[in-house]
Length: 422
Image 1 (cartoon, helix red, strand yellow):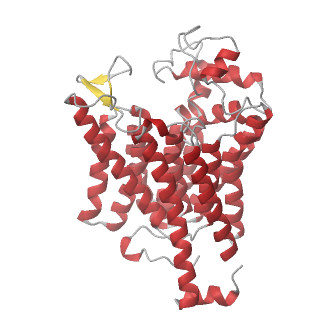
Image 2 (spheres, one colour; image 1 turned 30 degrees about the vertical axis):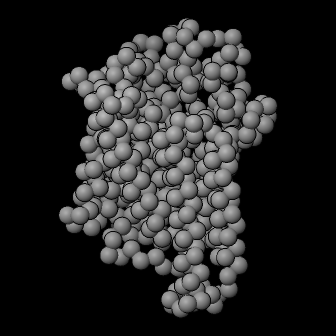
Image 3 (cartoon, helix red, strand yellow; image 1 turned 45 degrees about the vertical axis):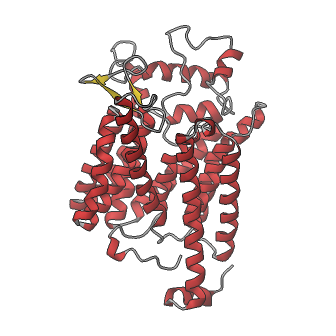
């Protein structure tokens, strides 16, 4: 642990504290870079898209960072409990996996350790946030290039036409880019757009507008109605919160409602009203998820729930019944219960509490971004699983970016982004 004199030295900018704080900033940034590289490489190299040794490596780096960060400076009680909450949530699938004789979900374990390291790092270091928005821009540019090459017939895979996707706009197939699916790409770009817009609004400089514009075009090309609408709505909420900061608690409350409302509407009125078209077929996934939850509501069915092997064990084909047995529940709460049962729900509530506390206790542009990020995640959680899938390492880029946003406690104005002690 650091002494009081070391902390005072860091605050005064003396070498004793300043050097150590610089090392802590570097360690935290390395953790963010490692998870970003892991996810982007999974996008670019098909052989790395399944959980495996890269996730073990990410976990080891994050674990070493946690030990260093926790021993060089004692975290505040709030950040300590926040680190426990995120570790418990992403680690809960390990408990259910062992209980059901399944393999350890190494990608989820790695995400648990990464999230804890980001939270325990210096709260005023902007690097995880900067890395997040720059990663979004890189993914946007690479996906845009891949899409253009796909239109020219040079490469196959970055475009989803009506044969494999639900829609084409004006004959233009949806962009999946390097992410493997339009919805996956849209989620990443949607949050990146929100972060970039918040930075642009805080700085009011021409250069700050470039990143949002770079990200916007491929986001629109994904044709993902949920993510495009969520990103636009959240940018509007940023503007409204800047004008009326007192509305932030209502914004946060709306995020919580958005996460559970879609399946609740379906379960309540789905038999008398046609909501399937409104939610683009997801009610089938919610009904399937409810069936799976009934199999093991206390402990869940493990991280392999709804996989091909899972349906095979149940003696069901993914093409029987309604014609589609989904690979996930298309709702964060249902998916969490299906995987980890009551234990998972309790840990999910802990993560929600961490996010809500971060959004309500801050001020200025940082608070507005935190609240808008919760809304974005809430809108996604209602119809997708934005906090990551154990069998899909690419899916952990979005939650890593979200943790980076919520872990950062400083201002968004670049001229003031000078990391202090912490």
